[in-house]
Image (tube, rainbow, N blue to C red; front, side):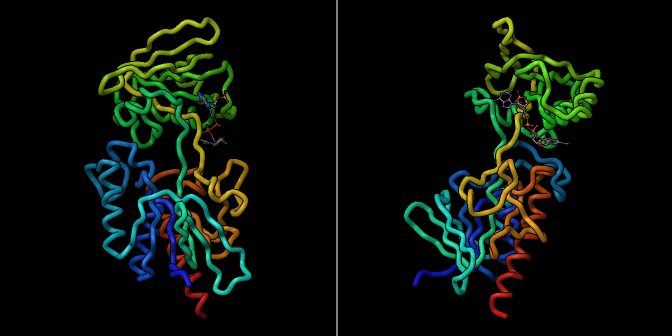
Length: 313
Ligand code: NAP
């Protein structure tokens, strides 16, 4: 008879680690499968100035290390590997359990909390990766304030890119929007807002082919698709806003999701499978903040706790 865990938490960003802190404090001894690259999207940012409780800010990786230590303090056990397969039970077995595999190793639990997050789509350049957190960012809300009175650019033509470009004009002197076509995908209202903003300048039919800079971003090389010409634009920040993808491949066909793959939750953090809960960016494409992810991680923990109690009543 395999050892059956109370709760397995998959994913270790703010949502998952908050769920671990709460379920740990409830003495449920959660098992977290945190992934090889633990900590989530905050591991890719530098200073976090908007997480309450840190009046002078905190570095993203340090904040996540603190989350992890707090979860460990209350008895969370960690497996620093990626989940490779899940088999979520749909009832009919008593007690209902869910199986989670890490390679050949199978773990079973009465409840599962999914907090696998979302990943920002990237252009795919080596220089973009190297300068991530050093001028390249995927989050204007997180990093915009570092670019006061500077020239920066946003890549993308959707609502996210327009929203980020408009937001960034609060700080930057100029925001270029670099888009690969000559028409925006963004909704009319977002387009109009961007067109009316004097600090925004559009660069159409162009792609960023290189992010320039040794330790910090100093510019970008862009290619004009119409003329095939390349040119350099001097700037200190590049915000990549070409969409996010929820990390939900593991659950495909088992958990209901929307058309973009985000897991659907109801009554708090419940999914369509009893005993399986989802929190954080894997089910939220609207707010996408560390603090909202943490809040939903707390909700998932409380919902899971109540679910486990109901199994014994
Ligand atoms: P999106 O609508 O998928 O737009 C992505 C944009 O990035 C598109 O313009 C696309 O170009 C471009 N793009 C994609 N891959 C690229 C690449 N490899 N290189 C260069 N450009 C690339 O994504 P989103 O803007 O994040 O929006 C996602 C969803 O959230 C949408 O439904 C949106 O309406 C919603 N949203 C709403 C709000 C709001 O209402 N306030 C704010 C943000 C997001 P093409 O146009 O050529 O495909």
